Length: 227
Image (tube, one colour):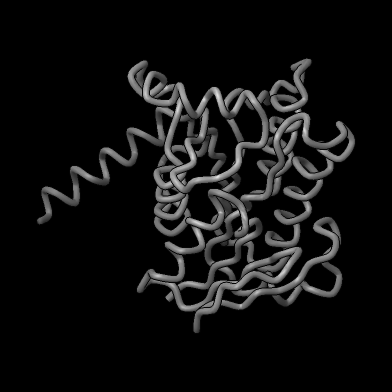
């Protein structure tokens, strides 16, 4: 039975990852780090309020004996200042990973990154630059680390779109899907892939959108063959 730690369970993808963890017979305990209390209630679930996601001095014990961790915190480009975008994208993620490494060095860590993440750190685009920075810094820690790089994430659950561009993308999603596996993925598909890889691992450590679609297809075919 595994112990799981998740940050960002109130988000579109993190919430579905949390549901998978709570319903899994492989998982004994789920610790969810949140800024605000949710209405979630489950015998496996322990919610912990975190005021500062770069400072865990009073919460080190939460990171002990963790088998799998999911970092799903993120904000949309342009929704906050560049300084805050970098803090959330890089500092939050790296702080989480460092404390995890110090307390559970054998844990698997799944990071919700994004398509175009630039590990050369030369990109002029904040999204690509900071996602690449976060991946690079976490990769040096020596954890079993998986970077998930989805393209457009189609929200299966109805929601208010964060901006006009996302409203357009939602409308165009069926067309994006027809263009192949490089460009888009459903929120439920991404969360399923994160959960499966976070618990069981996989060979690839950087998972582009097409890799995630391929992984899920293989999982489905394997399950069908077994049945």
